[in-house]
Image (cartoon, rainbow, N blue to C red; front, side, top):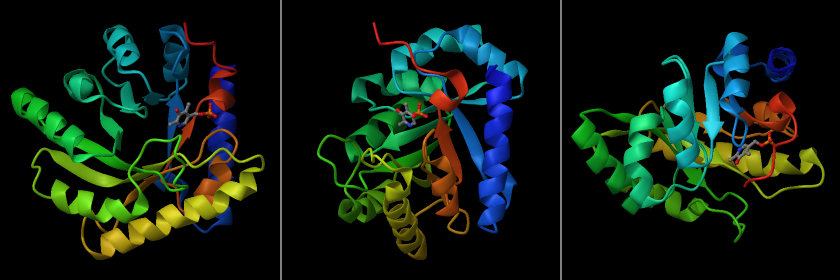
Amino acid sequence: MISKNILTIQEKITEAAVTSNRSPENIKLVAVSKRFPVTAIQEAYAGGQTLFGENYIQEVQQKRPELPEQVHFHFIGHLQTNKAKIAAESCTVIETVDRLKLALALNRRLEELQKEMDILIQVNIGEDSAKSGISPEKAKNLLYDLKSIPRLRVLGLMTMPPLEPDPELSRPHFRRLRLLAQELSDKSLFLDNNRVELSMGMSSDYHIAIEEGATIVRVGTAIFGDRPARK
Ligand SMILES: *Cc1c(COP(=O)(O)O)cnc(C)c1O
């Protein structure tokens, strides 16, 4: 069931890419496994899925040792500074760096571990007071500051726009993130300014996000079904 859902989503990703004259290979699917057991991840992995998204660091810490090395976690939740160590050890990409203090904490831990880490900057594109992420106006200054933090590789931007009743209403938010990324890459603020990652789009609207330039889509429900409640 899970593998079949992933295939269906891959097909839709290809479709949306072709519609917008993009290459499907440039779009990565992160399967959001939060609150689902390790067995669900194993099933998806057996079907070829290797990227997974989690939003509680304790959950990554529990699941990580039970899974093969080829399974990679993108951290997509709010990260507390005091969890930087576990995040640095157990995740491949932190998509939700939104403040200098967190970046410094991560850098310190990476220094200890003698490694570098790929990150995205979480932008609160809808300026929604209920959401984390840096405001679009402040993103540029944060990126300038990050230039002097050696162990963080800033690959691009991530956003979680306000929940809209109609997925088509997410389009302006996605477009705004793409335009912001363009503005920042013009100033050479990313690791590769010719290939900036844009993580946007979830189960209900990833096809629209792809039309607007998403390179990473984060899909949970459409793969794993309805999430169990948090205990
Ligand atoms: C849970 C979550 C998703 C996946 O949402 P679905 O609607 O289940 O696809 C994507 N991004 C973030 C940041 C999330 O927390």
